[in-house]
Image (tube, rainbow, N blue to C red; front, top):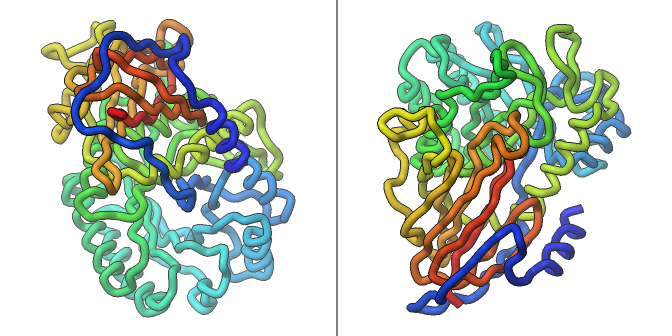
Length: 441
């Protein structure tokens, strides 16, 4: 599908369409060239809870646009090994899950050398450790180094979001895990994964509310990923209603992707993929037998196609920071700042190519650069997409400096727009984001 989308994208390059507006005079200064990026990068999209292990189910997962599954159940059994071979056959990877969480008892198959299975990209040794159980994670890291130091099988653990279950400050928590992660990398040269699960879309008397701690939590993890030069900044997104988390749809999937991408995330997984047996939870993206649950299976497939269509471009850039813009229509502010942005501590205070940014809804602008120093920007509408239509639509106006052309990647397609007077306006529906590259050509 990615190759087909690439062809479609190339055919759509053109001048401004009704969605965007541009006016005035062009940019001055040194001239840029239209960039080209190698097609060897993949934004890894995964999912938690694999379906029954058979070839048909893994084909269904692959067709949805997944790149890997958190692989669990029966570790060390013949069915487990068969499942790994089925994954390899359809082109999916596996993050093996040991089942270690909460308890300090860590029982899993330590005899098999899983590096012999090409589908295996890593082992998930612990889900949501606390500072106390981080000691167990450290012990497992020593075992991993001894067992897998000469392989590409990565060490992985998924961290808590903000919660009192951590047993200390969040910075202390991040530092403790990153120390283990860096130790493993120094001993093995393996990829460094920093992962967190934050499920911010909550039920309320109005139907939905977004957690006000989402962005500050995400910011702390993003800064840790940047500081420790991780290979994969991975985040789970909500795809199944559970607890206080509300039911979600395609717009919500897209929204969570783009918010995470504004902070530089380069791998995202759905929680959950398969519908579980807990009757108080909603459906996953497939049922308990691995069959698609609509409309969310198709919605996730659409979002995955859009992200994979631009991943060669997005992954060619390195995240620098996020710049928040409080929406002019937002009446829920503190000292003129959105309640969602008020507790951010490391936001950018200016953007290098953008002199001024205005928006009608709260908007996130992530600033990036590529190997040649060229700037790129993720622009994300932060309005809750639960409220459809005009209640979440965002008009963003950017005033550039020395820019006369903007490459825009939106909904899996690429457009090139002429900009005059440096001003550029775009419309973003609820849940939408874009990646744009300002140029002077």
